Amino acid sequence: MKPDVLIVGAGFAGSVTARVLAEQGRHVLILEKRSHIGGNAYDWLDENGVMRHEYGPHIFHTSSTQAVEFLSRFTDWYDYEHRVLGWIEGKLVPIPFNLTSIELLFEPQRADHLKEVLIREYGMEQKVPILELRKSEDQEVRELAEFIFEHVFKYYTMKQWGYTAEEIDPAVTGRVPVLVSYDDRYFQDSFQKMPDQGFTALFEKLLDHENIEVRLNTEAMDHLSVDLDAHTISLDGAIFEGPIVYTGLADHLFGYVKGDLPYRSLEFEVRSEAGQVQPVTTVNYPTPAEVHPYTRITEYKNMQKEAPKERTTIAVEYPYAYHRNGEKGNVPYYPVFTDASKASYEAYRSLAEQIPNLYLLGRLAEYKYYNMDAIVDAALALGRELLEKE
Ligand SMILES: Cc1cc2nc3c(=O)[nH]c(=O)nc-3n(C[C@H](O)[C@H](O)[C@H](O)COP(=O)(O)OP(=O)(O)OC[C@H]3O[C@@H](n4cnc5c(N)ncnc54)[C@H](O)[C@@H]3O)c2cc1C
Image 1 (cartoon, helix red, strand yellow):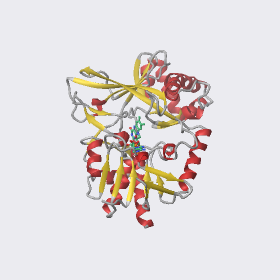
Image 2 (tube, helix red, strand yellow):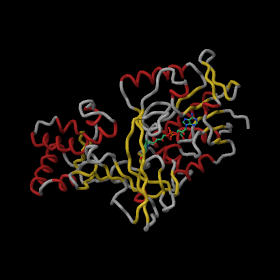
Image 3 (tube, rainbow, N blue to C red):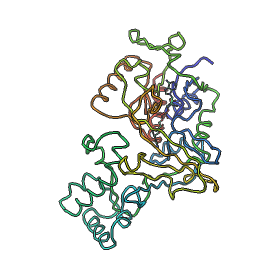
Image 4 (spheres, rainbow, N blue to C red):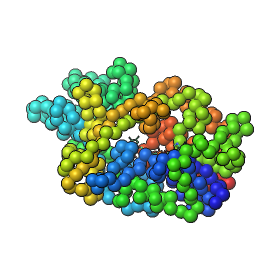
C-alpha cells in the first residue's frame, strides 16, 4: 500500500484521525514506536485477571456527545463512577474535599457548624475554588480553607510537580475546587462509563480497517528526516507529499534544536496482593514526602466490570523529573508549564508551521493536557479538516 497519509503515534490522536481518513478511502500508514497500540490508554489483562492500565488509571468521562457517538461504534460500555479518597490525618476522606470530608475530620458539633457556614456563604451543590475560600471575608471559612489547603493541596502539589511550597504558583492549586455537596464522585460529567472490554480492545476495532496499516516497534525518527530549508519531511529518503499527522514530542521531531521541553514523569511500583486492599480505585496521599514518598495508589480491579476476587494488582505512583535518556522517569507524562517552556514550545510550533503538510496533534505534539474525550474531538476535527482541504 502506498500511503496517502502518514501518522506518527497510535494513541487516540493518531488512531481516530486514521479512522476518519480511512473511511473516506485514504490509505493511512501509522508508525508507532511502542510494541502496542492505544498510546497512554493501553490496558491489558494481567496474571491476576486484573485489567491493568500500563500508564496510570484512565477513566472515561465526558459531556461531549460527539466523542461518545464516535467511540460507541467501536465499543460497548459499562457504568463506572470514579471515587477518590485522600489519606488525611490517618483517615480516608472524599476527594475533592466535600461536606462528608468535613464530617469525617471534625468533631460533630464543629462539623455541623462549618457545613452551615459554607452552605450559607456559597449554597448547596456549588464548586468553590480553594483560592476563593482562602480570600473569604469570613474568618471561619478562611481557617477551614487553610486546613484544606495544607492537608489536600500543598504537599500533593509539591510531590506531583517537584516544586517547594514557595515556588508553587497559588493559581495552580487555587483552581482545584472544594465541593459544597455530598456528591463524592470525582467527576460530574453526564457520561461516565468505561469500554466494555477495555481501551486496547476499543483501539483494535478502531484500527481494524483495510485502509490502515500500523507498524509497531517503529521509531518514526529512524525513518523521517525534516528539511527546514526545503520545508519538507522525507519518509525513508523520499519526500512525503501527503498530510503528516505527528502526535509525538515536538522537540524530538526537530532534533531538540530549541532545547528540551520539560515534562513531569511517573514511575509505577506494581504489586500483586491478596483480596482487595482499598475501598476505592484511587487513594491519594496528600502528605509530605517524608510521610509518604508517593502521590497515590491505584487498585485497578475496583474499576473493572467483572473483578477477580482472590488477587489484586495495585500501582504505587511516584512522580519524577523527566529525562529522555534517564534510567527512571523517561516517559513524558505532563507538560511542565513555565514561561520558558511555553516560549520553547512556541519556537517548535513556528518551525512546524513552515512545513505545509505537517499537522501537530495530541498531548505531546501540542504540549498540552488533553483528556481522552477532548483529544477524540480534536482528532475528529482534524480528520474533517484534512478531507475538506483536498
Ligand atoms: C497519568 C495519566 C492519567 C490520565 N488519566 C486520564 C483519565 O482518567 N481520563 C482522561 O480522559 N484522560 C486521562 N489522561 C489523558 C490521556 O492519556 C490523553 O488524553 C491521551 O493519551 C492523549 O492521546 P494522544 O494520542 O495525544 O497521546 P498518547 O496516548 O501519548 O499517544 C501518542 C503515541 O505516539 C507514540 N509516539 C510518540 N513519539 C513517537 C515516535 N517518535 N515514533 C513513533 N511513535 C511515537 C507514543 O508511543 C504513543 O503511543 C491521563 C494522562 C496521564 C498522563
